[in-house]
Image (cartoon, rainbow, N blue to C red; front, top):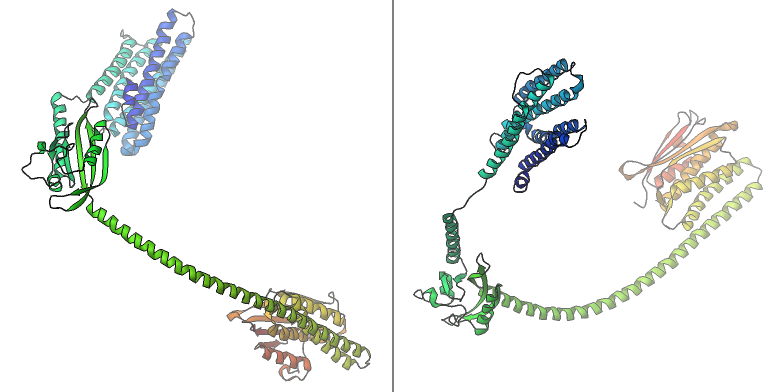
Amino acid sequence: MSYILYTSNNDRTSKLIFIAIGATMISVVVSGTIWYVLPSVIDSPLIIPIGMLVSVISYLPLLVALLKVFFEQKNKLASIVIQTIFYINGIFIILLVLFTLSNVTSYIAESYRSYLYTLMLILDVLLISFSTVNLLINIPTKHRYLFSIIFGYCILSFAGDMLSLLKTLDVSSFNLAPQVFYDLALIFLTLTLVVYVLSNIKTQTIEEINKKLEDTTLLVQDMVTHSPDAMCMCDTDGTVLRANRTFYELFGLAETDTPRDINIFDYNINLDLSVVESLRKVKLGEPVHVDSVRYVTADNKEKYLSLKLFPTKSSDKKIAYYILIAEDITARKNAEEALKNSYDQLEIRVKERTAELYILNNALQKEINEHKKDEEKIITSLKEKEVLLKEIHHRVKNNMQIISSMLGLQSTLMSNKELNDILKDSQNRIKSMALIHEKLYQSENMACISIKDYVDSLVKNLYNSYGISVDRINIEKDIDDFTFSIDTSIPLGLIINEIISNSFKHAFPDGRKGKISITIKKGENGNFRMEITDDGVGFKEDVDIKNTRTLGMNLIFALTEQINAEIKIEKENGVRYEVIFPDAKR
């Protein structure tokens, strides 16, 4: 019965309760068989304990189901009510355990019975507690009947288990057998489930069935009458039993014509014979759809119809009626025809336009080919000019190297130290400019050079030129990897050359050690900031830097003006040069 209720119910909570009741009843039957039947067949002291253990297990399906429902719905009941119920039953369980422990000491031989009955009573109390809470939660719903059944079953089971415990402990004077309550519990459970099943079965009388059939017929007739499409209902011979006004108007029938004078399978509604023959195929039991039926009305107006004829079958699977739906698709047909004409005209226009585009495409392709040839010529010319430009830079660099070498040879022939220093300075200036041209013809970009690589090479040349080691004067560089145009790089290189040369010659006299720092960063407003400092002896206090007449300082000021730069010179703790400059390529 529980299985029938489980399969016939769609409610998740009800299905859970029914499967739990079914599992409990199966466990009770198995327990009773082991407990009461097998001892008369098998002589073993383990049979009864096993039967009692199975009886304990039979409580678990219901307990699990009640716990699941409780945790899903516990928020629907006030927590004080739930706590009160659980506290009362908890106190009862504690008293029950104490009662068993205080009375079981003198019955060692069968003490396991006392403990198992006590465990059964604890499970009874838990089931009563959770069924009570779930019953209170579900009073407004149909589930209250199911929880009431479980509550009643648990009360009877509790009475039987309590009586069994009292008899086992030999503290009861009742003569009533516990089996009576067990039998009453099973009878109660069975009868209440039968009542539950019967209360949910809906019976239908012949009058109710006839009324439903009549309602269905009226519904079909109303659909036929009030349908916006032309519609009629026919018998199996094709005779029209009922038709709406749209049907009369569409087929040009008079209001005085009775429906039974019209037959859809005969040639009396002005349909072509081929269309009627198609409609007769409905007698095979399958719907028939005839689209785009040309129909001329009584006033010689041409219309197009979509006819749908389908059978309706009775309970014995035989055809009872035919339903014909005729939809006026004249507007749609005219729209399709207009669309087709537009499509044909568009197709012609597309072909004409395609021909025009073909001619234009050929002309354009010819022009593109000519442009490609011109582009190839330009690329070839640019490559030739690039090679020529590299060759020019290379020759300029070589010529400057020759001039530098000539100055070097000249300095070796002169004994005047002051003139030697002048020639060496000139030689370093020429090398700094030659280095620019060397970097340009070695670079892929003929317009710009990397300032970081350039400064590295320039510093290396100055070390070699003055014969100064890194251990004595260390040059620290913090330069971002920017590329500058040749118009910026040459003046900037000459400025760096002059400042480093001055530091090498004057900042560290008598073999003094020191440090020079070069920093080039991007500053505000897109300008660049170069800072060169040394920790040497610095300028003398009486030296006016702006009015000095030395060639090196004059070059520094002249070159800063050439690149539109601003220069600041500070004399504290050595010398500090700050140059703010834009890049000419920007």
